[in-house]
Image (cartoon, rainbow, N blue to C red; front, side, top):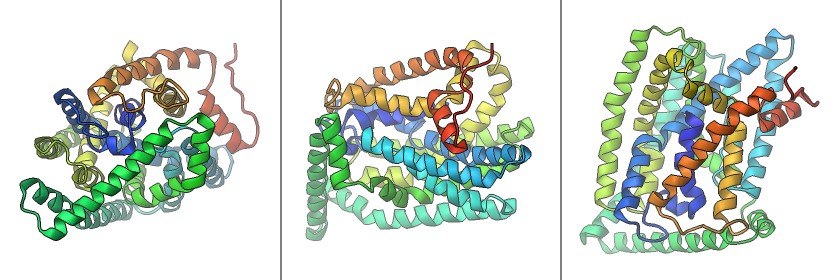
Length: 394
């Protein structure tokens, strides 16, 4: 479910410049339908799927180490090698396909989560909560003057300093956007060369900008794993409480921010602050609610056709994530069909549905013949230092 939901958010990052992921009114003014589509994705998917993915990554590291240790291997050493390869895959993903890679970020944060995973549960939760609160609290305070300056400009009550600051930031935004648009219309080799020439360390910069969200969520995933959440050991009443609390708190908070932003046509300077900092607590609350709901539904869902398709898509999540990047880049970038900048958020919805359908269509048939997805096999083989078995025994 997380890898499907991430597609709903990431499509905008392929269809237009990075600034277009923050507002439906860049690079061109959006329609009412574009704003409605953006608001719906913000309400249901933005931040929530990324949070689930981060928590699952933390849990999966524990599972990997435990299985390796049980097999007489050095689980931590293998996991470190695995994270190193993930960082390389992420850097290549950025250079060759997409600026919004999270694999490098996960590999880097995963090293710290691996070191901290043995802390007592109370310390682990305290550390996760502390880092998350301090990071986002500092971001909220730092971003507040920007949000208020833009609001005062809108109301016509801005001071000279506020008006000048907003004008400078908007000019910088449009300069960056023009460069991003120009790059997106390059050929494949030229685009990769441009990234290497001007921003070869972008994945590292992104890691430094977002580690305060990702690492705490990984640690929370470790804590949930150790508490038996993913093994189905939580009683139903606790899951229902988690579901109800997460939705009761997170959904109104998210809806209120969506309503505030929509009434102002998703202001381009305030929205990055909302997405990165102000909406983060609500995102985590709703992510936890989603996870509790899925745990409650899993016993029934796993026996259905849809459940089996979802399970298969999840088992090849790495291939689905990078495969989505390849398909969307080929659709939108200049070296492919060149649809970049031509579709608003409403026009992107059919592409989301098509990618979902493709993920659910290919994953199960592939796994009926092969043990893993193609990129899962590559990652595992690189980690082990040898080609692993691929085909299922007949």
